Amino acid sequence: MKEIEIIHSIRKFNRNYVRSIGLLEKSFLNTGYSLTESHILYIVKEQGKTT
Image (cartoon, rainbow, N blue to C red; front, side):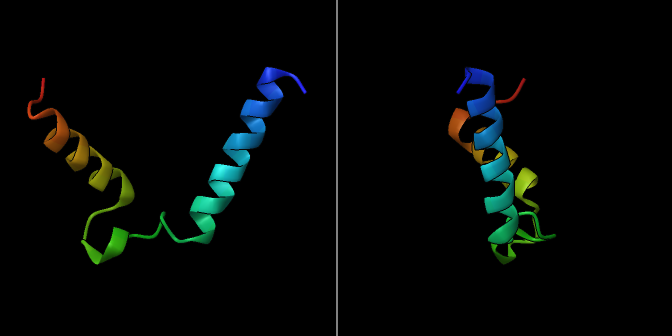
């Protein structure tokens, strides 16, 4: 299997897994924030600064 095929397989799995456990629902863990918003807040917290 070529490297690009492996990457596509992993991405397909990730999309299906994320969808199946409900991470793309409107509110992540009932926080009122989406998964993307939660991820951004986590990054800002960990880095301690923004640009």
